[in-house]
Length: 63
Image (tube, rainbow, N blue to C red):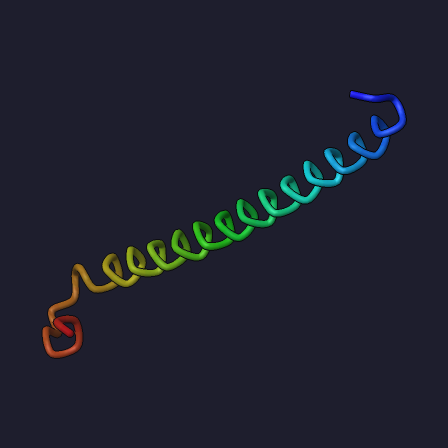
């Protein structure tokens, strides 16, 4: 590669890598938030199930 275009090419490459890494990090951050939200929903369901497991009032616990 000619020396006069080396810096320009390297700058474009670094910019592309930075953009890629920002997008990748945002994707995984959103994925982690979604996983945490799903975990909270599962824990809420477990709590409801545990609260209702010993109940004798089937009209309330069945639905």
